[in-house]
Length: 83
Image (tube, rainbow, N blue to C red; front, side, top):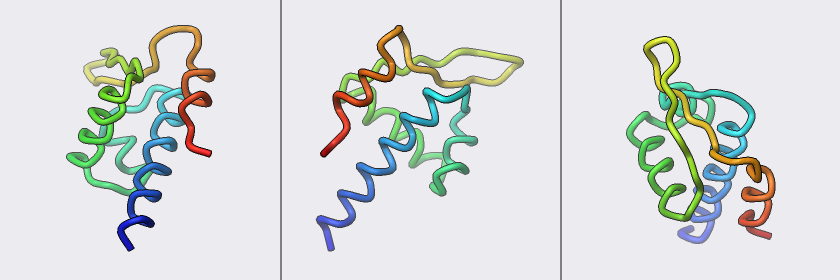
C-alpha cells in the first residue's frame, strides 16, 4: 500500500527528530536506532532540513553529531507533527 508506506516514512522522520532532540546522534547511530541504512538516514536528514527544521551538525571527538538549533525545539517538532 503506497499510503501506508508514506505514513511509515512520516513516522520515521518524526522519530528521527525526537532522537536528534534527545541527544547527540551521528548518522550511523540514527540509522541503527531507526533500522535504516546510512544513505537512507542522510536522505531523511536532508528531507527534514528541506521542510524547514534547523538541524545542525556539530563536531565532537572526531565525529559529527546532529542537534536541533534554537530554543524552540520542542514547539518546532510539535507544530509540524501530523495529526
